[in-house]
Each structure stands twice: as structure tokens, then as C-alpha cells.
Image (cartoon, rainbow, N blue to C red; front, side):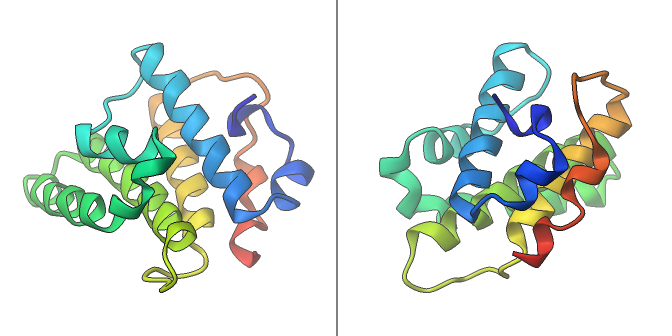
Length: 138
């Protein structure tokens, strides 16, 4: 089950690692259904826990792309990139002794997914935008 199918109570009780795992599974599901484009550097790091130590470098590369697409006002592409950035922040925090990113990165990763779902108008089973309400407090 991915994070889209989880109730608010379940998400609120999840650890940062559980949220990351569920977001990555959601990415796999969306990618296999051709519903989302993911950057190769994201896939390389996120889909192989042995590569999580490279999440900071992958974040930096994707951040440059995000800034470019924001500059040319490509909102859809920017949203996909921001979603990936946020997941990489969580991965980086989990895989490093030095937490480079804010502790609420898991919240923003879930929020980014919720934003994409709402903008695309996807009707995904059990998806609750409110499921992210308390994740940021972790």
C-alpha cells in the first residue's frame, strides 16, 4: 500500500522512515502507471537504499532543474521536481549523521504529492488531502 491509500491516523503515527518508504513506493506506482515523470538521479537514489548516501548530490542536481523550470514558469514540471526534492531531503536526513534539511521535510514531501494529485485532478482511492495535517509535527 502506498501513502495515498493510508488514512490520516496511520500517516500521523508513521516514522520519517516509514513515510519515506511509502512515498518511494508511491513513486514506483505512479511511474509504472505512467502518471509521473521522475528524474534519473532521483530514481537512482530513491529506489536503491544503498544509494541513499548520494541523496544530497541528487537533491542539488534536481534543485537546479527546479529553479530553471520555475524561471520559465513551467508549473507542472516544477511541481514534479519539488516533490522529488522533498523526498530526497527526507532520504538525506535519514541517511546522514548531519541532518542537512529541516525536520518537517516529510510533511512537505507528502504535501507536494497532495498538491500534484489535486492539480492533476486524479481520483485516487482513499486519498485524503487532510492526511498530511500532522505529519509536519513529527
